[in-house]
Length: 202
Image 1: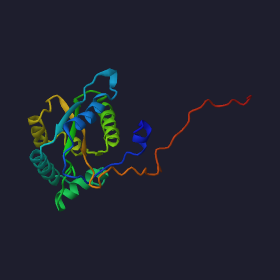
Image 2: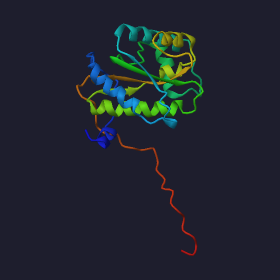
Image 3: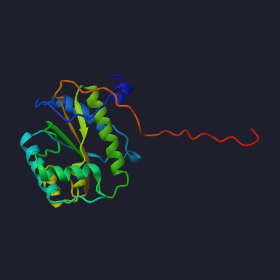
Image 4: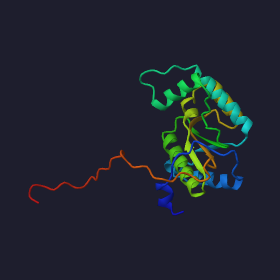
């Protein structure tokens, strides 16, 4: 798939088959993330890869439990408000039962932590689309980064004490077989061309 096509046809996937992609395919997606740009070429983004179903079930239950203890206020970000509400009212699996969950982390106090990780996550989503995999950005662990129980769990699986959780990505084969590649109309993201203004004498 040509690069621009992979970008323009990328869509988020939230329903997955239980089939596990091969480790070589998952590795290609991760390598795309590792080759993302980073501030001063620091290459600080840490990729923690979960493929064990039992561990993902434990993590989902822990996330649900921690969100259920929270209260949403009028200024709470919409997606975070949904996670809090869903954890209290019904079955809530923050990673949509995808077979692969890749968590990104970066150094605490590093000014480009979020930017570097965002570049890596975007690279991985584009690579996933090119490889006929579905993917979706997952932010719940980032929102719970300062939660002691979440951090303790993540430290068991490689999160450093000096690292902050910056995001995550679910990955797998879409329930429909192939990713939905119908591009959505862009109604936002305005573009302004900052061109030199003409003077009165021109």
